[in-house]
Length: 121
Image 1 (tube, rainbow, N blue to C red):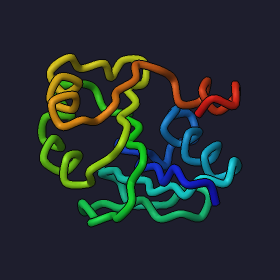
Image 2: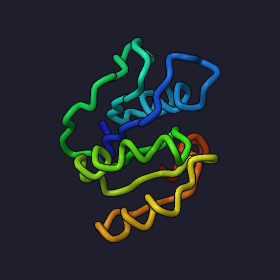
Image 3: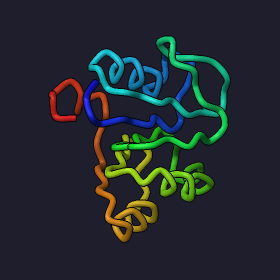
């Protein structure tokens, strides 16, 4: 497994959603992935966590929530102590990005799927 354990925040069981595809692509590229979302189910055989699990050694949180829906997760995001937060298209949030920077967390406005396809994840 690659060393960039990734939390997909806003994971969905709906195959038409980019968060669903991101979980599958991360898994296919041998990343340890933890999908977290509000709906019960699984993606690629991985259970979507509906509570806010304690997860150790998180490298990246990739966001699939619009900015107003991110607010309730700020404390959770920072409790995971990620090294990086990826703001996928439509999730850009200057407030969260600034808070992350004050905590020494790198942020990227990028598409997880594009990063994976280019080999630059």
